[in-house]
Amino acid sequence: MRTVYPVGTTIYEPDKCSNGYNLISGSEGVKLVDMNGRTAHFWNVDPDRKRGFIHRARLLENGMLMLLYGGADKANWGVMEFNWDGNETWSFRPDCSPHHDFWPKKNGSVLLICSNEVPEAVRAEVTDPERRALAIKEDHLIEATREGRIVWTWKQHEHLDVNKCNPVPASRDWPAGPDNNTITDWTHTNTIQALPENRWFDSGDARFRPGNVLISMRQIDTICIIDRESGEITWSYTGDYRGGLSGQHEPHMIERGLPGEGNIIVFDNGSSPQKDLAHSGSSYVLEIDPSTDKVVWVYDKGDRFYSRFTANCQRLPNGNTLILEALARRLFEVTPEKDLVWEHVLTDNAQRVYRYPYDHSPQTAALPAPRNLRVVPPERLVIEPQEG
Image (cartoon, rainbow, N blue to C red; front, side, top):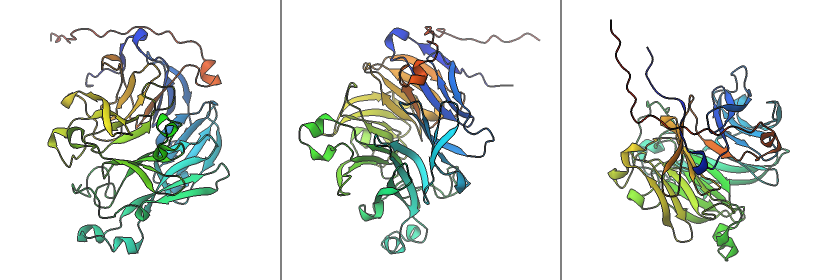
């Protein structure tokens, strides 16, 4: 007997949406899904199921698909590029353990997050004896060229206080694994972005120089911007909405030409809040003016909206916002007034999902034009009992 649970597109108002293709990566490969839930294209990038977990997938404007793989087999770690037919055309596998995110720069190089153990001398500075007795992980940020040459590195222990950590412990036998917790997994960086051109820098604020690096450190509930040249942290944000950030994911500066350009949008998970229990069990999407640290827009549905881990958000060309409530496998689009105009229930787990315009690349533009059909759910669905 199967549990009754809808899948596919359950709500759709075509005239109110920023229509396009949704890039969804899961255990069976990567697919482009149209607004009615039809698969428009599929990349069978791992036919033998040997490469492991897809941390992130991005569709480039030239039609190339870039993925970040991770898993038990170190030989499969790394960022890889595939053509439209699913053939691997490029890869980079660093000696460290890349995870969670990558950012393809316009010059062809790639930013990566890599896990490493802090040096012994740094671990000796830890005041908590339980943490000091264990191997403590940190993240190194690197930039690699297409030729595999590392041209920039930023190590967290050189810029952050190793004793600034999340005071809420997670048992080492919990489902996420013994080293994915607040005791040994010090920062758990989950997002990286090279800042785009923006109005703040145009007006003279050097903190937001294009090319500076924005990251999210989940365990310490902090997002920050790193000066690409000096390595100094030029901007840091923990927030104050419902007690501040809590286990956040996917902060990124909204690109020029999109509504809210220059602001930073972030999925605030509400996982292990340190300051206000009203945040527990509730997720929010926040749009922040980084020049003032003020929240200028928020999506807040109380305890009816929650993803403890993973998830993401994306500002769309018409001003709507795409939101992935990952653990519920729910992807939806809301207007600036927070009206729900599209909802899609995934059939597979996805850490991040991105919306691309129909003409994003020559390959997507060449696909047959999708039929955008309105979807209205019934007011009340009742399954009648069977006699006998």
